[in-house]
Image 1 (cartoon, rainbow, N blue to C red):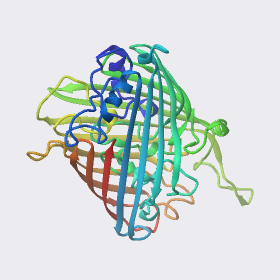
Image 2 (tube, helix red, strand yellow; image 1 turned 90 degrees about the horizontal axis):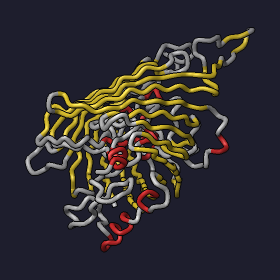
Image 3 (cartoon, rainbow, N blue to C red; image 1 turned 180 degrees about the horizontal axis):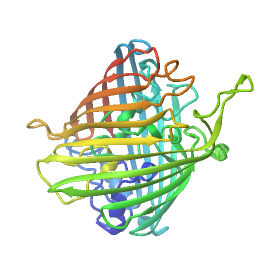
Image 4 (cartoon, rainbow, N blue to C red; image 1 turned 180 degrees about the vertical axis):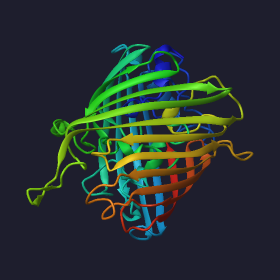
Length: 440
């Protein structure tokens, strides 16, 4: 693997997860490693295969095309705001232009992600503030669950200066970037609930898709440092240029991998600062000169830690874990955890924690099946006019899933959740569901 391919194989936070797709060692110059698309339907990594050899030829010329189709059928069977079943689907298209492999710009890469959505989700009837079905919640639209013909949520240019540094500029997705070997996948591959792929303390200043820029530094093959400045207003369905003056977020992440004994593990630490925006100051005076007023402040912050560790592996390897694809690299089992804190003057959720276990290949002959179980908690600081009237002082979530590998490209997942809403007066929701995902 050449140096730049190694750099690309190391996942980064949010917009810097350059590849969300399986990778193999590159056999030529270029930033994106080449993939073997060939094989029978029952064994190849993409359902549509090599397109008669055309797909590999395009990749060797610097063009990579990928697609995925996800269908969710979920139901609130007890509690929540209402009971019922909802069905919806999501189509994702990825196009990468490796300008380095093309011989056009050394170290240059253009990445585009488009999304299309139809149907409905249980997010509106579950009774929770944060989504219980991340897949169908994003991209954000004016009307929740609105059908979306096409949205360009990522159009980013990345320039590598060396195997140790790069910069990026453009539109990119932020949420789902807190990657974790056992709790990632942005709702597509592992857990479905938002609480197990994103820290809830960051929701106040993290949009789904936005404009921004940033730097990437790779001191060695195990550690990465990323720092980015981006608009804190979502622009999922717009260009984003009309909201450039509506607040900014500065986010910096240090992420690394290590070995505990002979088992792979990793962790990351992120700090975020939101500024040049208007945030409700819950510590201020809501009553002023005999009337109600809304105290505001112009900045806020959060910080969160993310860790994972394999506890058992069937066959070990020195190859770094690819966190960007949302799938387990090793057959075995492990544990994960997240902890986050936030400015309690501006953020209703001032503390969150989640933890759980996951694994791959639990049964003989089912080496590609995966499973997970997790618990998440969000604490709502006692605030005047909010706690006890609109919000409870905390919310709990439990989720468990089992994903059957129909083929290496098609997965059928059974999922169950128990969600304790932080909305006052709303009973905990029991949610059952099925997810079918195919990569083309």
